[in-house]
Length: 558
Image (cartoon, rainbow, N blue to C red; front, side):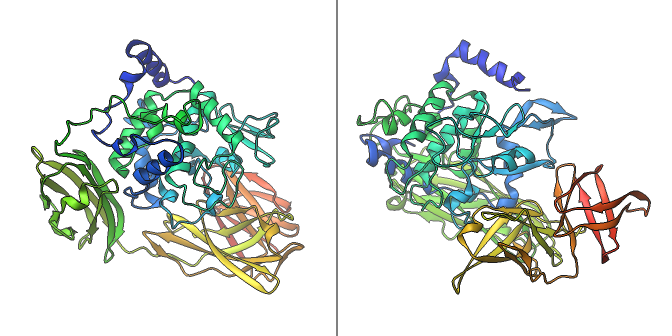
């Protein structure tokens, strides 16, 4: 599917209509704050335009948004579109997200992995990715591979060609069809989040401009020019805008990258063909008609809030906002009037909306926006779903595996009966009598740590998260450079999931291992298992017993 029907149709459309006509209409006045600026001033104006956007409801809700942004609508199975995965060729179909990860194309570890920045759930750089490709990609920079240690026909990982990598041992090289897509995602990130402090500087540097390292500029501009925006990107940009209230300007205006880093550097930027209103005409730039604000899943008895950005030009009086229809009692607004002094600014005004469900089920209503000197009105839909308060059992943290001088893999066992959105690993690093703690998010029952060399020893606990609620912290696992010590659990053998099977987690060889299905039938016996031994099993749940351990293991193979 490397050359999908959608890609073929898009190419034909490009020939027939021309690249400019493929692009959807840019909201009138959206980019006016960039006009007349160049270089550092222009980049900061882009940052100010993009940063103040509506955050998606939660990390766990990303697959729901991906169903709007990353599907092949022309490739169906039983009426369900196939996921559009830029990292692998896999025939997986919505609504199931099994086999996929939520992939930060711009690695989250580069800013330290913190969840306290909107970058963590920004759809402009988040995509669905097949698990193996996502794992292989790791946090490597983009680049061209001189050889490969991973190659699935779409994604490559391996040592970089001379002059690339920024000191990294390996780089990630996407398929030619998607190199421009990722280049524009990176352009977006270094502008929108130029205020972040970078932990890894393979491609970025600690400044507001140009932020990108020189080798990264050369690579990304090359990919950007050779693979211009496709219909896929135009369509995705529109959907993300309806969700987040911001856009990727390097899709709308590909030449913008040239003004910042390329052959138009130093020249003053002016937007073209944006359909700017006549001088003095009242114009509400955002929100646009039929925008939808989704609060995701919320536990009964809890509330969720979301911001809706209002930004306009030449409004002559206050805007009126009101809730109407359906379940409006479940939602609340802090005001019914928004002053022109707040809306008629480049930063705009964030209206904070609260969803407080009092009954289980899905709830919808609308915000009606009018006045301000505008002709007519606009409608924004609100949606939320209320679920019972989750029950989460305490996890069992397992011994770390694959311990080296620079890294290790944290592992834990998943209770089969729990529904979990994601896991939080609380990692504590010890150094010369001092300690520091950070929280890291994981999608599976393992997490790779790649900077173990920055501490003398470490420990970790794990919690599961569902609907914003956390389980109690697990037992503590201590990790030394010489191996694992101080395991506070009566389990010396554990497992970690891998696609299509399991990996045994242990520090020594175990003997007489038996594997049963949930009906009690013996599936297989193993004379012995060794540390990090992998075993492929059919999809299903299994019970594993071993002579050296009183408590059996329960595993679920996906």
